[in-house]
Length: 311
Image 1: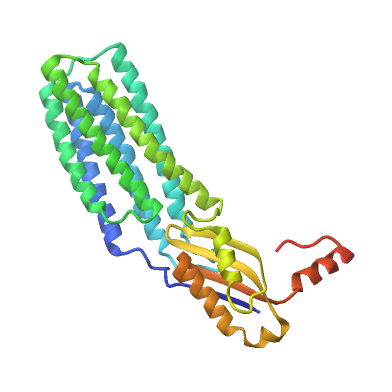
Image 2 (image 1 turned 135 degrees about the vertical axis):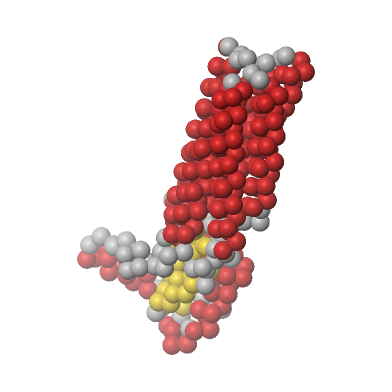
């Protein structure tokens, strides 16, 4: 007997997520234009570098928005799980972009240490303050939507923008008051380290999802123990737990029961689904019921007739 069930998570993305991303994208684009023009007028490499940062973030936000729209498309015969994994791919790409941005910032910091430019500091600070306020607004638009890796990737881009703007403002004030031009590249390096730390976590979690690793917070051995504790379950094998996308976990396993219990195993299936959903937040559950000793008998048969097929 094979039973398959899943929760109603196909449309879990609320319109507010898309609206928040679109507002953040518009805000980031406005800052991009302002910083590019302001950097050119003030001869500020910091503002021009931050404008490049904003350009990559605008592309990342657009990608995140497109990924959410595509992920809500229904499953097809060729894509039976739908388009959920596009979110993870977008999060992975965002993480890579964050790392590349950090490398660029460090390189620019090195260049400035070697040859500090002459900058119109008041204009630089004014544009950076506008960017700071706009980034704070962008964070507000995305607040409360950090559940998925895709949305977290977009959120981290805005956080990086905000920190970059803070660094530019602080560096500008210090340059204005003390003339210590080396403060600006030092702050740039510190900001890049913060961005790398956030990007590393995003990359690690994205890769875990793509490798179908057991989701964080779920103990594989504990899930097996709880299923074994269900009445009339005498064996569990081929237990797999993975994540389709953030917040949508799946489980499949083979459960052995006594032969006489096979005709009335509906209640058993209900209990296993309840355990998976309520105790481990696994919404997509596939269980194959087998008579006790079925796998052992099959292994003997396979050894006699040839190599065992993969489950």
